[in-house]
Image 1 (cartoon, one colour):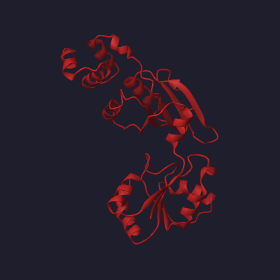
Image 2: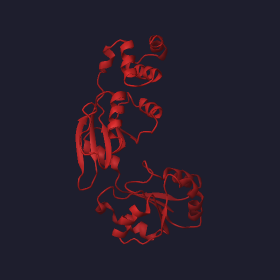
Image 3: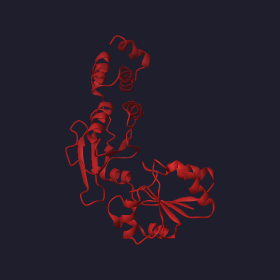
Image 4: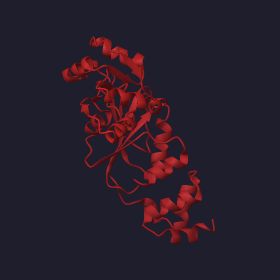
Length: 265
């Protein structure tokens, strides 16, 4: 049996008895960083072999793990914090186990996106997007899918990218209220309510979740001419092709209509 076990995202006391029981009974534990996981496991006196399992080796580990499961071994997968397979390794393994018709289950635990959504006080439905891609083109293509979606949007953000991601979201979605949640369940947990335009001026250390409120209002850009609307995005650093996509989404126009204006720019 494969057990996907949620681990504390901050406070070690959030680990439940069932999770401790499972980790004590499995043959070995897969974890992202053995040093990080050892802190938790030592706290609960769990003495089981640890095997490093992360995004750089998860495919090469796949066959060995599947063979062990087929032979009757019990294996647990944990992440450094929170639920496995939520912006952490696990998805590839789950899909392989499904194809092999092997047994697997989830042992519930904390999840940063759920905590942040509840702390924000915003309304469902919500959409979890996770970390933004590294390449600007990939970011644009991803966010454009959600530009006019009536949903609260949830992002994971590293401390190094928070200013950049704020600017990116502002350029795509316009100004919206956002709840910035930092260091969930830890001693210095913070929740800050601001807007994308105002930005975030708090402590930039630790792990962040951004919850973007579903407060789509009439787009002020639609009061501009189509040409001015295009230039607004181009002046923000977007390509002409991306600007055309944005204007079409903002105004509900066909690409051909906007392209006729853009071709002269």
